[in-house]
Image (cartoon, rainbow, N blue to C red; front, side):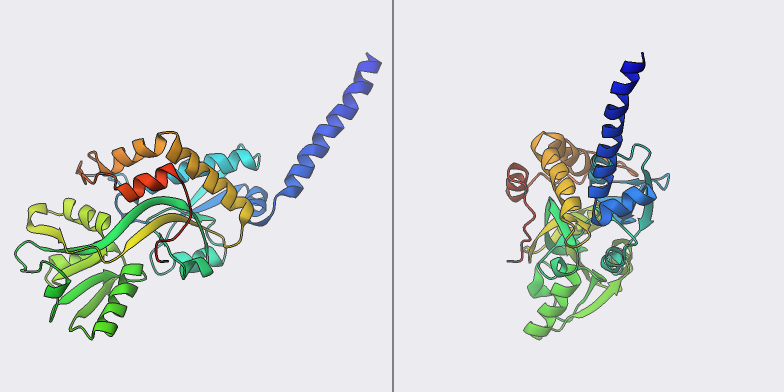
Length: 300
């Protein structure tokens, strides 16, 4: 018996040392998450179908489901079985500063990965691909960007769409008045109430706002796409260890069929809170991303 105990003690000590070494190996944000036993997720409140509230004020959506899978992987990777999840709402204006100052650890919403933002924060593999178009009232007489002369166009503040439109107006000397709102629902309200004649944004956002409006038939998504954008999860810049886990999780989701099921659930099926169906088939560009996961922006 004494001999068995003597043999067991070194093995036990080795196990403890291995665990301690693993804990010490953690760096960057993973070490912070482990130390506080909490991961802080930034989420969007009205970016349907990516991240938004349902009727019970619970956060749901395509990006939210992906974030939950990432949390599970991080939980296992840092050996934190009781890891707590804290949720903080973010918007287009404050999401990057909140990542930079360490308030949030991960944000999976509807954020575009582009070269400029990649100088400030890190981005995961692409989780969705979108394009920018116009939403307008069916009787507005607006059919393309060429019809915006003398019109007021709504955008959401802090988005790549706002930046593109302001640059477009400046370079083209276009007679377009721009009105911005804090979030997408505010931008749609500007269109709905007549303060703006069109709403310029990602086509999936526009389709969602149209579908959830009181009278969807009153609105149309029109115009040639102005940009194509890669939507990704945002994480701390330069944190290679955390990015490796996030990218690995997304690649697995996209290649094992889970991603296709999630896409069908949120883009091709009735979704809460009103049971609307965006009916947006997966594009060839997005299919290619699923086949070959990558973190490349689309503004090269």
